[in-house]
Each structure stands twice: as structure tokens, then as C-alpha cells.
Length: 516
Image 1 (tube, rainbow, N blue to C red):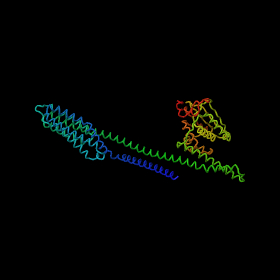
Image 2: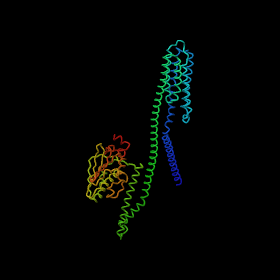
Image 3: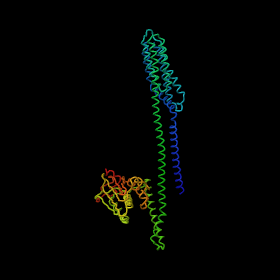
């Protein structure tokens, strides 16, 4: 006994530790998500870091495109400039370009807490300024004698291409954009203004205008990037809210499942504990009301004994129904299926209800279609279903009324049982309440016999376990009709003269193959 108790206590401690761990994990996840949600006020600073990431990613992706452009420019410029100068310039430009690539790679590999440091922005700005100065050196290369206007035109075309390229690469960081383009524009403009011709003045003015145009274009690209990042942030916030709701709902579901399991265990235990004294109450009260040990001189005592026996019988029925419902909800109710005739079950239930119906002068009408096949079902469960429905029909039908029980095939090939009475009916808005556990309609509360309100809940659960359907139709002051239908997969062909035993012929493992 001591070892069993210690094992039980250890199991309880393990369960409590698991629950505490789940609660801590859920609280931590909710706290993290809510902290992310509360960071919406710092959205602009977050965008600054996101733009730095986009800047570094763009530079890494263009690691080989920019050197290719520099190589083409150096090769063409060799027509007007000494190849030695162009080779030296090309090496300097390639070095500054790959310096920016290395800085971008270092930024991407840096930890998150270091990426927010301002030193990275300074490195990007300085690196872009050096890169822009290396391109500005191209326009200061000494030209060969007699180069003509070809080099001037090529300089201006190179200016437009390089500024456009730097704008696309550095638009996410405005300071880097200025650092990479202004040195080029300044050198080209200054170089053109040194020449005393209208063409050079015109190209200098166009260089300044191109610089302004690309700055406006870079500003528009920056706005587009901010808009994209804002949408992404809103999406992240929405996902965070959904994660929070999901975490809360998961924890609530776990608590509900634990509470439901505890409730089912409690009901099962209490129902078992209540039955023992209740059996004594029922036994002794029955002896007293039947005067088994001798007559009672006081008639009131006998009336009290009858009341005690009736109340105890009602309480026993309530306990039995609560136990059945809790066993079904806990998933411990097992079906003992076998081939049965639904007609026999309905007839047996009708016979059991004749006494109660006769006491209220209620006529029971039974009709069924002949040659219905057997069904594979739990006979006890179906009997409980039909008895509950017949009992409700007789209970709510007034004196002198009638109850009709119909049995037949459904349109899809299954079988159904319908029970219709001409009682007071149920208001349409009360039908969902009646179908709930312990739910009773207004008429049942006012005038009906004693009831627990669990009958229809048990009926629905048992029918669902048979893959069937339960429906209720009612009209006020006209009556109520309830229908239980079993699916076609429950039907089966059963020959009385077969040599195979029923257990082998109707094995549940083979039922799907036969129904198919």
C-alpha cells in the first residue's frame, strides 16, 4: 500500500511539474510576443536597421557586377588615356569596391546586438565615400593629346551610369548615397567648368541636374523601401498577435481538457460512492412501504416511505445517467457490437413502455417495413436510445394522446427510427437548450414529470458512436418528432443457415470491406 501511495504521489508531482513548465513556457512566449507588439513606437529605428540589412545585401549581390563595369570603362578609356594609368585606377577601384563587400559581409555575420551600433553606419558612409572618390579619380586622369570631344562625351555617359548604379545600391541609406555620388559630380562639374566652351558648360549643368534627379529618385526608392518594411512590420505584428492568441487558446484548451477529465473522474467516483448508501435507502424504504415486516398503524409513515423510495429511485436514475454521460465523455464507453434486428429492439422497448402509456391512456402505434436487414450495433446502447426517446414522448404527451413509432429504410440505404407524439411541442428557440446536458424546456419545467435533462445528451452521444444522425423537429401545440438514423455501412447481409459463426462473419475488421 505504501509503495502504491508513493507511486501515486510521484505521478502527481510529475504532472504538476509538467503543468508548471507549460505555464512558464506559455508566459515567456506571451511576454516576448507582447514586447514585440509594444515596439511599434520604435518602428522608424527598426526600419533603419532593416535598411542597413538591405544595403549590405545589395552590395553583396552586386559583388561582381560593379567590377565588370569598371573593367569595361577602363578598357574603353584606354583609347584616350594611358593604359598604365587606367590599370592603376582599375586596381584602386576594385580594392575599394571589395572593401565595401567585406564590410557588408562582416555586418551580415555580426550578432544582432552589434548590428544596432552606429559604428556600422559610419563604416558604410566612409566606405562609400572612398568608393565614390575612386570613381572620381577616373575623371582626373590625364588625357592624351588630340583626344577631342570623344573623351568628354564618354566621361558624361560614365557619370550617368555610375551615379545611377550607386543610387540603386545606396538608396536605402541617404548618407551613403550622398557620399558615393557627390564626389563624382563635383569632380566632373569642376573639370567641365575649367574648359571655356559652351559644350562643357552645358555638360556641367546637366551633371548637376542629373545629380539632383538621382537624389530625388533615391528618395523615392527610400520611401518605397519604408513602405515595404512598414507592411512587413504590420504583418509581423499580426502574426505575433495570432501567436499570442494561439498560445492562450492552447493553454485554455489544456486546462479545459484537464478540468473535463477531473470532472469525469469525480463524477464516476461520486456516482460509485453514492450508490452504496442509496441501495440501502431504496431497500429499507421499499420494505417499509410494502409493510414486509408488519403493517404500519400510521398511514403518514407509509406515505413518507413511498416518497423516500420514489426520490431515491429518481436519484439512482440520475446517478446512472451521469455515470453514463461521464464515461462517454471520457472515451471509456465501449460498444459491444453484434448483428441485431432493429425491429426487435423497437418492439421490446414498446412492450416495456406499455404500462406507462396505459396509465395515461396513451395509444402506442407501431409501424415498420418488412424484410429490413440486420444492423451491426450495440443492442444495449440502441435499447437505451429508443427507451429514452419513448419515455420522453410518453412523458410529454397529454392524457388520451398518441405516440407513433416508425421504422424503415433511409433514402441513402440506412435505417431510421422515428418517434412522434402530439404533445405540447417545443419552441424553436428552446431546441438547442433541450439538446444540452441538464437542459430542459419551459414546458418541461412547468408541467412535466421529474427528469434529469441528460436523456437527449446520452442519446446524441450513443448515436454518434454508431456513426448515425439524430434530429428533432417540433412545433408548438402540435407535437414533436425525433429521428435516429444509422448509416448504410451498418447494414449487413445475414443468412440464418450459414455455417460461419456470427462472430467470424461479422468481424469489425472485415465490415469495411463488405460494406464497400
